Amino acid sequence: MRRWIWGVAVLAVIGMGCAGYLLKPVSGPARDLTLVGDVTRGNYLIRLGGCVACHTDAKVDGGFLAGGPGLATQFGTFVPPNITSDKTAGIGSWTLAQFSDAMSNGMGPRGNLYPVFPYEHYTLMSDQEIVDLYAALMATEPVSTHAPASQIAFPFNIRLAMSAWKNLFFSPGRFEPEAGKSEIYNRGKYLAFGPAHCVACHSPRNALGALDWDQALAGSPGGVGGKAPALTRAALVEEGYDVDSLAQTLEDGFTPGFDVLGAAMGEVIADSTSHWTLEDRQAVASYLLAE
Image (tube, rainbow, N blue to C red; front, side):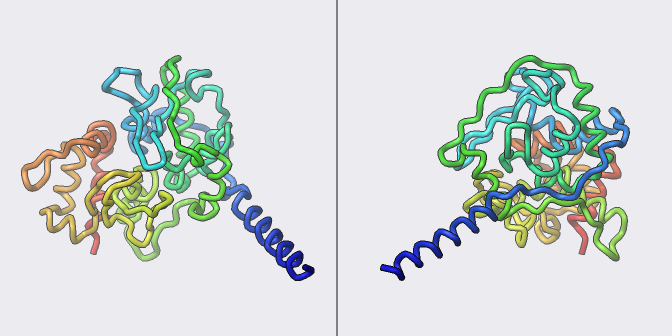
């Protein structure tokens, strides 16, 4: 009997220790939020970060950044919210600190955010970029329409459970340039892994929706990010791309094989990459095609 009691006690201690680890807050380095935001730079970041494609439902003309179409996953359907400056339906009542916490640590005013919102990529952004983006969003035209509620299956609808996901799979921090590489290479890598989050769609994920970082940009067979081709150098060269042609495709959607990219990538091009500077399109292309 005594051994049984001790066994239960040991299991209870282990269980509490695991729970304490998995449910602890996850946060990265503190940000300097005393910086002055620039709306013009922030408006570019709205396009750079893919905010328009996700948070605008062009099919129903719901308003710019007023909420996007639902994203169906094996965990439920996630509806991108209204991120206009409206204080009730949007994020107009958020403080800069709250916005920074959401972008950097995946923590919103109501608790943990689901990683379908790519905070694991936005966390790489600089302090100035976070402040600029906040300034631009606070300057948007407010839209008072609430986005529909997401339909998330149990137990994934328990936000506290996301603490465990974050402790297992999320390491918040800022982008660190790769030593010995050129400025354009590192800019492209930053965009692909950071705000542009190409890696989010073009990489496989595990059963819990976490990216397989060892297979980054190797393509996705489906699941949370949908089906997406590989963006490795070998795959791109096989499709006939060089740096200039890939940068051109990111602007107009025409491929070297005289095809036109449509569906989700077509939306990304129309709402995001076609608005980038030529230098940023070339930077991403240079990184992806680097030997």
